[in-house]
Image 1 (tube, rainbow, N blue to C red):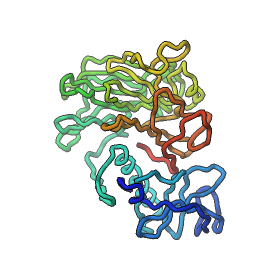
Image 2: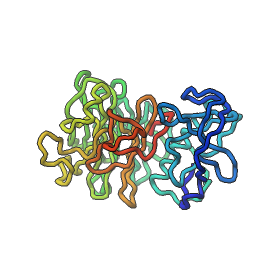
Image 3: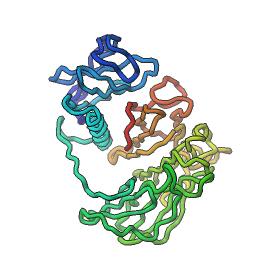
Image 4: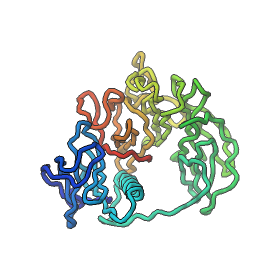
Length: 369
C-alpha cells in the first residue's frame, strides 16, 4: 500500500457491479454467489471484492487463489493494496497483508510524500522483550520501550540494555493489564519529562493511570500521578492507554470501556470508553467540551469508544487519528473531534446512525497498532 497525491493515481474506482466469486468469503458466501467489485488495481487488472453480506463489514475473500483484503466502504483516496504472491501459505499471506496495511496507515497519517510503489523495509531492532507495548525515541537515538509485565527498557546504540530502568511505578499485571505507553514531553530536551501509562490497582478495582516523571538516562525520578480513570473497574481488559500530545501542549489519553462495563462508554460521568484531554501537569483545560456541566467529567474530549490503542497526531494539521479494536473484527480508524460521540456500544463500524460519527475506515481481520 502507498500514499499518492493524485486521487486516481493509486486506485481506479469503478462502478459497483455484480461479479462471480471463485472461492468463498469469510461471511460464508459460497462459490457462485454474487460479490461486488470495488476497485481495480492500476495497470494490473486485479480486482478487490466486497461482499454484500448481512453484517456489511469488511471481509477477506479468496479469488483465484489470492487473498484479497477489503475494506467497507472502498479504500479512501490515495491508498492501494499491494499484490500478495499466491505461492505463499495462507498464514504468511495474512501476515503480509496486515503488515502492509499497518505500515500504510502510518504513512497516510503522516502524509508521506514518497512515490507510489516505494518499498517498505522491516528490520529487527531488538529481541528478548516481554510483550513490548510502547516506544519513545530519545534525542540521542536511544529508544525507551515498555514491557507489559511492568518494566521499562532502553535500547542503546541498537542493543537492548539488560538492566531495566529503575524507579518505575508498580502496576497491576493481569490479562491486558500492565505497562502501556511511554511518551516524551514536547520540550523533553529542556525538562526531561516522560509520561507513562499503565494499569493501576488490583483485581476487582483497577484503572488506567498516567504518571509524569523525570528521566535522567538510567532512572525515573520525581514521579507524579497526574490522572487516574474513574470509576475503577473489576475486569483486567480494555484499558486503552495510548497517549499523544497536541500542538497546543495538551495531551490526549485513550481510556477503554473496561469490557464488562461497555455501557459506560455512553455515560459522560465516567471516564470509561472515552478520550480525555489534559494539560501537561494533569490539570483540566478550560476549553474542554464538558467543563462546567453538571454530571459530566470535565476531562472528556470524545466518547463512545471501545478499546482505543492507536493514536497519532498529524504534525502539520493537528488532525487526530485513532485506531479502535472492534468486537470480533471490524477495527476502526477514526478522526477524533471535540465533544463527538463515536457510538459504542450502540453501534460499531459502518452502521448508519446520524447520532454518531462514522469511522474513516473499518476492516477485518483485526490488527494491533
